[in-house]
Image 1 (cartoon, rainbow, N blue to C red):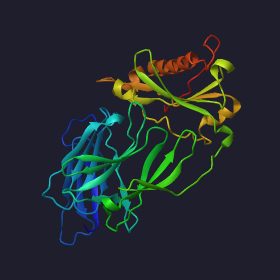
Image 2 (cartoon, helix red, strand yellow):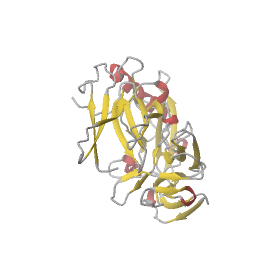
Image 3 (cartoon, rainbow, N blue to C red):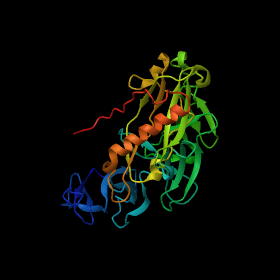
Image 4 (cartoon, helix red, strand yellow):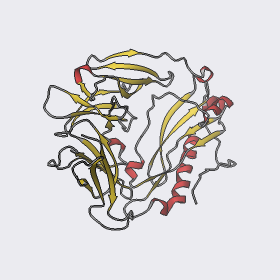
Length: 362
């Protein structure tokens, strides 16, 4: 394809309250129209345009999204062929982490741009690799799926171990100038970590199932090497399931050492459904990273830290999340405090002063 411009025009004037179909139209035009070429319609969308991920050759993936319902759709489009109609690949709720298909693995071109890598196989059809976080009720299990975008069929060719380690596919290490990677020559970069071991990087060679370690970083803070980390689950008083990560100082035992001062570090999030709000989006096998913007250094002062307790602000159906914002904010915070009191980590609330600090834009 020669150098081409593409742009989006909102048919509702940018006003989401206007009922119109299509809502957005994507146009294309040669950057240097030598023969008087006119813009042509690439795609019509009933939701709001989000982005396009390009690849060499015939196909690209276009994404649309509607904030009020959290609906997201992914289309297969053919920029080089006006005769091929867009085909719907995924139609789902963006909140549903358990059903997420992941995102395409990208490849860098000789020009330095990123495009979707095409995977060459012995089978018919066009294949790409999808990497995802693999959220499950027991914790995240990252994966790579081989996706046939012609039929929608997929095959899981790699996923993280679950017993001890958390592994995540980061980037392709195979190279081809047109980003057409042979499946039997596939190599990709992964990170591998555990509760006690900092992330190391490996080159994974498929299909040999072989990993070559390329880093050997020491523990970044050995004084806290034996800190305790646990993903905990509990319920709000309205039955919504909540999740948090509880960190305890090295060697601490609630039954012997008694309760601690506890720092709770969190931020609320909006949801359209109770089910999505209660999903687990973290792994019990991840390493505890400490940086200057995260409160885990307080473990060295003998504090407990409750990190990222979920504070879902839910607006189901026609309700807006903020309709019951304060009520749900307080209920979530109380549930978190009650859980760590129940575990003996924190004093009872009789003389406990605690606050939820939340920044809002007025």
